[in-house]
Amino acid sequence: MLRAHVNGFRSLTGFLFFSLSVLATPLAVAQHSHGILTPGVTFPKDDSVLTDPPRMITMSFRVDVRLLKLALYSAEGEWINIGFTYDPERMNNNFVLPIPGDLPSSAYYIAQWSVTDDRRGLVNGEFRFAFGPGAIPPSETIELEAEGKVEMLPETGSYRQAKYRD
Image (tube, rainbow, N blue to C red; front, side, top):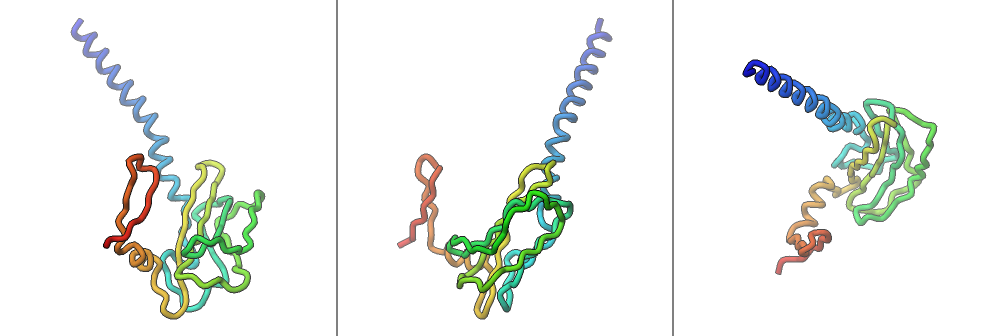
């Protein structure tokens, strides 16, 4: 009787271990697969400072993806029309989008993108850059703008507002 109970315990333990490993594997793969959908190379590079304004935005991925969105914004959050249009037929691992005309003045620029490879779901990301004489990396600009601000969260925690220290 004891032998049957021990064997039953081993069987149950084995079954539970097998079930957990089967359930955990897709989660582990899902967590790591999004890295495949992030650009390996962008131009401009994230947090870069260029001498001259870029004439194009380039993104290279590790696998073929469908570029759903590529939008450019000023540091103030103003949308800059760079002429991106979604092409549902285009899957590629390299995208080059010329920037038509001159960019409006801004401390830095934010390129936001969204891609899918039709298997791993939607992935969003962004990179920032600045250019011109006196330009500094966007991360430094953001840090300087944040100095002296204290984050005040209301009781609900769902809204944020900045207050300046006296």
